[in-house]
Image 1 (cartoon, rainbow, N blue to C red):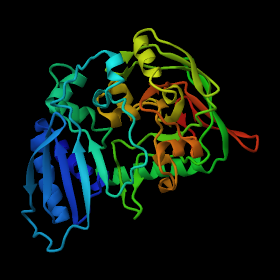
Image 2 (tube, rainbow, N blue to C red; image 1 turned 180 degrees about the vertical axis):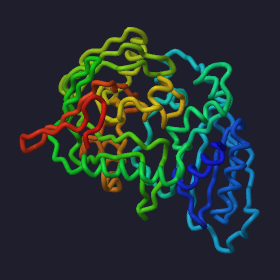
Image 3 (cartoon, rainbow, N blue to C red; image 1 turned 30 degrees about the vertical axis):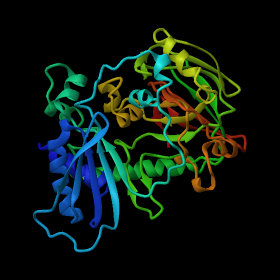
Image 4 (cartoon, rainbow, N blue to C red; image 1 turned 60 degrees about the vertical axis):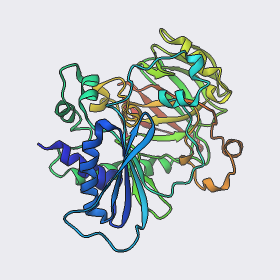
Length: 397
């Protein structure tokens, strides 16, 4: 089966949801240039506008290739809006990056490289965008072993990306509808706090930010135009009240931090803040991160993903943010993501956002994996009742 071509259609019709008249720009590293060119040609036949392919090397934009439709004529009118699709660099990057964590925490460029730089929170989204993974030989060998090929990786990801469905695009629509239903069910609950327990020893209580809503992987512009910023869109997440968290969290698997790996992490929270921490390996990474500012010592977000997915069984870490965030349930320390809130244009800066909503602010963020086959999440409601929303790692909603 030609998974490569099927995947291109999913990226354009599902992820970026490209429309006629839009001006699409595709950013790619050199190793994915052939894929980007073919994707641009396919996109141009839909947009009827030139598609720009921007070659990015070591984070710096270089050559720009313009791709025009061949089978159809260009529209005579200007583009209605822009759209950006970025191919994640899994082929040309320096995978085995390491540096002194005390240096990393002081350099935004290094924090960006390790995936721990806090993203801006008040940027208004005015155009659809998506950062997507593309199987390649380097990434295949990284995940599957030294003899693996690009096709091997496509085949292993076929379930995750729904490439092997009879009608992949329809399968994606049904999957997004299921997530939307789950979000609607969760958002109808008037919750005082959540109790999360796992088989690895996590036992923690978390209160949601009052103004926060459960969000999934699909975003919408003010016009209602939908797009998926990262694949897959499975996880559902909520902002945590930065002053409330109580209990202990045991990481259920190793996780990356500041260019290294932390194993066997245990973090205790008292009145919202970290009160103690330890790790079997990488404890110095935790120490370096937790000294940066007050916000990194507080929980900002919790995300739920069903246990036992194909993605979670493939690898501990992938090097692509979308896969790493959707492979299992997790808690985030540091900067929260303000897209969980409504009416962001009301706030002038991030500190006002924190003061008025409880959304946690920090220069860093990192994700603690907590998912396992025994994960349970119980919502304790304002009226004194409770309801179980996840049991044995599976949603009941």
